[in-house]
Image (cartoon, rainbow, N blue to C red; front, side, top):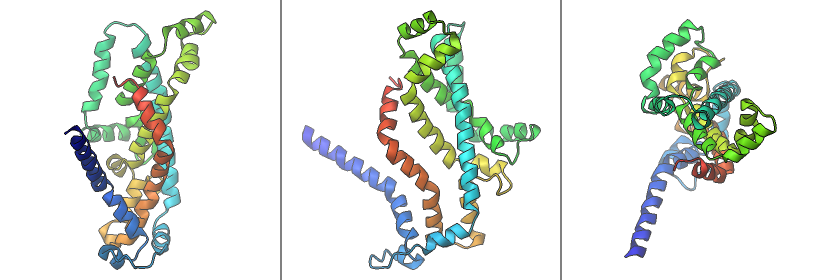
Length: 269
């Protein structure tokens, strides 16, 4: 009975995986075939790279890639700075009502970003951040999820290391930089992957706050490229989609083991 249950669970997991990956498989198939062959699943149809050439020439992808790179790196830098300081404070500094404040920070996880779009737009407009990389990334730099991960990672650092560093003459920031940050390196790596994938794929807020190709990230550029008024060619659109998601797929495949291990160590216990 137990063996049968294990086989059933494995079969169900395989079925869910196939359903989840099927859109990506279809996009990969369509990207290398003519539209009629892609839709009809003609297995004998010739493969072609023409769709990628057409897609590449149809939009300023280099600019979109640069904008997306600047966006994810600026957001990540802001998150590392703020989440490190906040996570250390919640983990190791004793202040009144610390746990209550931490719960208030975690409440951010229950608020959908879409709920705050109007207010964020008003603030960005008053600060002159509309149609800018900073305007896209600023609302996400104080991440409750990042603060939670850093707090859990810092709480696992032995107190003896903290005390030894202070005996050697380190101040609070010195202890943080020389003891806690290196100890939390696996957690930082996991959070890098989460943050990059989140903001690489973010669509609604960048769509609202950007007005030109000089600031549009890949997701917004792809949506404009695939707009019905520009003509719908499923093969070309699939090729453009593969170009957009390829860096993330490579990043995850390279670091997937460290990604899983980091979350297991991150203190979600």
